[in-house]
Amino acid sequence: MIKSSNILTIAVGLLLFFFVFGSFFCSKPGGLGDMDILVWASYGPDEYKLFETIAHRWSSLKDNPYKVHVAQIPWMGQESKYRTSLIAGAPPDIGRVDTPFVPELAHNNVLTDIKQYLAAEEAEKKMDTGEILAQYVKAAIDSCIIKDKNGVERVFGFPDQTNGACLFYNKDSFNAAGLDTEIPPKTWDEFIDFGKKLTKPVDGIYGFGMDNSLWWSFPFFNTFGTKFLSDDGSKCLLDSKEGIAALQFKVDLYKKHAIEGGAWKSGGQNTETGFINGRYAMVLMGPWNVSRFKAAKVNFGVSLIPAGPAGTSTNVGGTNMVIFRNDKRPAAKLRACYDFLRYVTSEDIQAEWASKLRQIPVNLKAYDKIKITDKEEEKILKTFMEQMKTAQARPKVLKYSQLETIINPEMESALSGNISVEQALKNAVERINREVLTR
Image 1 (tube, helix red, strand yellow):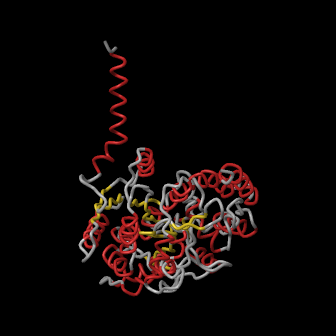
Image 2: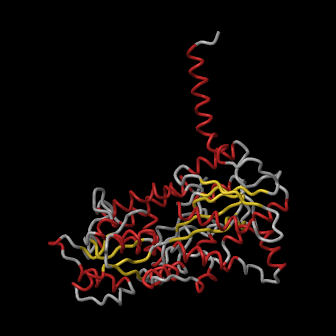
Image 3: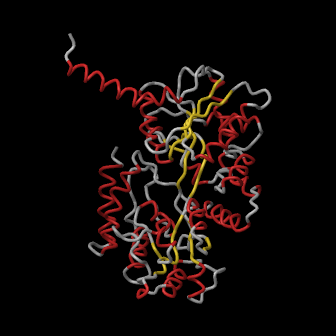
């Protein structure tokens, strides 16, 4: 006779099993075979609908025997879902993953290196070596290129979405300060001058609101020419003179020039809300908030991030489409997966994607093919497209989140005046070298 406690244990175990694996089994269309390609996509509703249309269109191409099946998975918790599917030995053929997740997947040898298919396509079309990769936004495709333990570069999929930050500015605030709304600051020196004219502490209005996190700090580090990792990836170089100058500049915006309104502080008014209510006249922001700011009836403009010693630059976010390894998958199907990703990221499809969804295309050849009837929205998108040409890929480490966890408190201590910029970066670099890069 089974004891009630054992029954409870079994029941809990079964519930956990179906909680972990159930969504995978349910999301997988029935009857998939060698001529079917399963894609896990974590898009929003409008994106998912268009992606399904594109997948159906590719599946219907003449002489194409393969059919793509798209399964929607939630954005939150997707990494755990992929890990679970890999443990179960049943990952999808293609997965849409956050760019910082690619190094971990590559390190665990669960992705397909597509270099052979790139070479084959270039040979078929009589293209120069590397010509295909050159079609993509550099920072976006760089996130797909990972060096193995021998230093050999491998290419794991293609970027399907990319984004970064630009400078958003409130035109009404500019007008009130006597600034030309059509000529935003082009350099960080001009930015400081603009900020001083826009700042009115008595009224609680500041020229700038900034975030503290590493991701939002990359535009500063990049424009000052900071190199994050050594060429072999074994050492963090953030405490270089360029890195120190970049972080000191951020600190000075708040402490010395007093044009930053404390958006980075715990409990402070965040950049998005502060920009909407007029507290911050300028913020760094991504394209995802354009519709929100328009809905809030903010009279705003978007321009390139001011240039530092190394010119203008931005951070980069986005997702990649990767092909999971499966030794039982026929070679022809692998090539079909590659061909589908090339189709999705082709210039015509990317032009359609950008035109309908107002998103930055990952294929540079799509830039001149985008058609948007709203000229203001078209102008904003083209500004982001231009900015993305200067973006730099994030450091390729196994756990990017660890970088944020280590660096953010140190930067906050520097901004608060508790420690010097030099000490903050020294502390961060020592921990990164010891806790992140030694792995």
